[in-house]
Length: 405
Image (cartoon, rainbow, N blue to C red; front, side, top):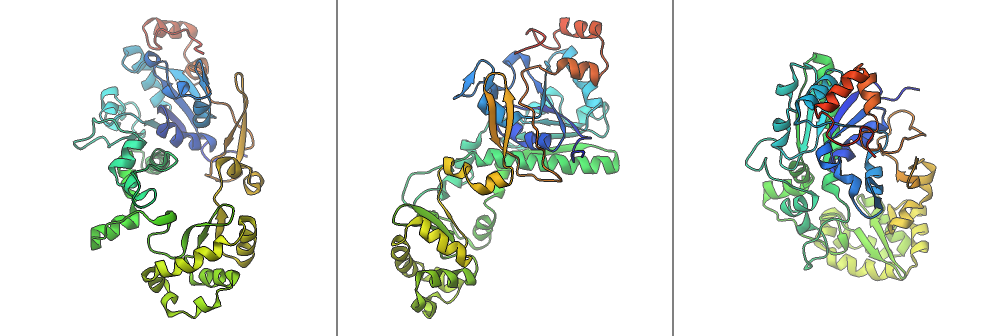
């Protein structure tokens, strides 16, 4: 069975985390993602990220680049640009995650490429976007979590500013860029005219403030941290301590709250007007938690989870990463991919959550640097050995050996 994006070719001038994260899901869906790696910098910096890095191989890079191909091209070189333009003519999209002012400098915008391919979609994922006073500033996930208010909302009240445990701005930015690219591709195929997609980590992070931003912008409410990672307005909806660990209990509907009280044997609370609805429970949050917390703390985690699950109350253990990756549901859903690597052996990773059609059962490891140069230059562009030699002599592929490792 064909994959959903098998007829899509993307030239990805990408590196590190956010950019490759956006395209790895497109590659999993069948897109031909060709990484354009800069030979002047030894390719994608993600190849060298520790731990588990040796030479140009790293598990960090493997996690973000499976099912892709790699070609080294110097886009500052006339020969490199010639090859790139010929590839653009045979592709659907140019994708990059560079500083906001760099795509124009490297000739990666729609205005600069439309004469090569009028339907090309040029998607840029940068820190602050390609316009505005901060366009030329670098920026990373940590920086954005501080700048956009995330750190002020993370952690316990009274504690120091904290980032989330994962690089969520990078990951969200990659998803948004992939989403934008596909929207642009749809329009380009419908109308025959391409466009720029200008995605920023900054606006992605701000957009995820969502209802808290609306509360503040409309009513002036200043969001604050909550104890035990509680929901800002729904009670109970937070982490609770048991006798031997922690669990998450969520009651975003009245029926869940009633079921929780039934499990805990707190019939009197059901009749208490202070806790009759969402608004009342929020007003009397401290009084309610003073009742619920000791009642839950009397239970073992496994016993509490069984009772709550059987009663239909949304709940979960607060797992560590090891426990999360051993969950039977993940295994049943085919949520772990495997590839074979010459240095690392079997590399296991979490599969893409983007399930469209039948999920793939086989995956290719991340590419070695410039591994697919011959395939791409001969198979897509039809270049013969003499033409390739001439381009190599002109510096199109940098000074490194032809088959870089």
